Image (cartoon, rainbow, N blue to C red; front, side):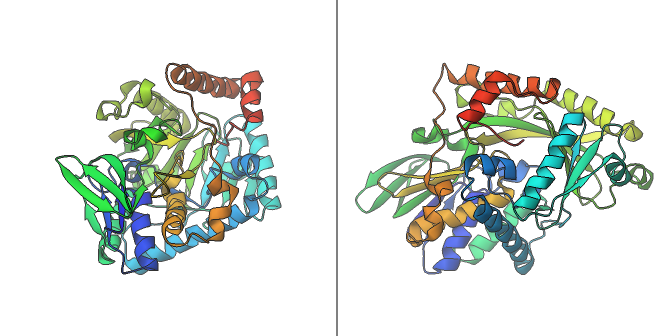
Length: 432
């Protein structure tokens, strides 16, 4: 095998596609522990954003010298993703709706106004909306202002259908997509890497691409790079015509509020409301397990917050609840690297905004194998590493301290306090 891709989510499937589109003669295998899209790729909220850096402000914080290029790359990547879905006939329920960010506290409205100004300074088209303008679009007693980004910045998708469609597109190009093939380890050998698969299987490959995101603790070298954080989602029953009319939302844009603890929400193709976010739960020791996928206490919080946001939907039922792990780094956006003498390449750390960014990251992995002279590989965004995350027993208290600090900032009018200002100075800060 020329390239073995570990992980059948967005990063791995896009990597297979981009490798084979560049060199159709390659032998490429995608090894997935469960089914295609089983992890965060199939369970996310369906927001496919242009940003590669988890938001413009986070990009400016970490890569001020590259941010305009990265913004251009992100918009180009999203446009190419949309065109690919259409050309391949993938039924991903893609809607180029754009996104409306809303403020529920006065300081958040000020921050959204500043975000619109920052966007204008970097060639973006984000518009600030006052309270009346937001209420005309989506009436809720909570909204005090907003910022609107267009369809070139964000589209909505059904993520599981997108993953399944990408698997078909990869197979059409000649990739072997092998589900229920859990990789247990890698061993360097002359001229390549031996990939051990549970059950005694062995795949010999010239290069290996690691695309397992929050499930990457199997490769111990990556445990200092990321932490897996659990996120949770509710889905309502389909809304009636009267219920739909009561909440406006004619543009069907994706929405999110603007606290550090924030909700994201959108309309599905069959007029359900997907409502997720708010809690971010870390389990000590980087533990990722099916037992953590359901968390009743978080679902109860989400239900209460939904009722406060949409009082006109009193009595609507939630028919689906789920959760899953996302991967985050100390700079809250993707990171790249090589191990085992440059034969193993990885990309991870999307922090919940990987639906679009994973395609671009897959191009970086492709370039690492086939295009070592690519200018993109010279970007500091690609070459630099985030600050490492300390091991246990320090990791859990530090993660919880960060979580408590951002919750406290929401409650204190946006004041980030000494701890968060120190983290900002160290480059450990983010735009939620």
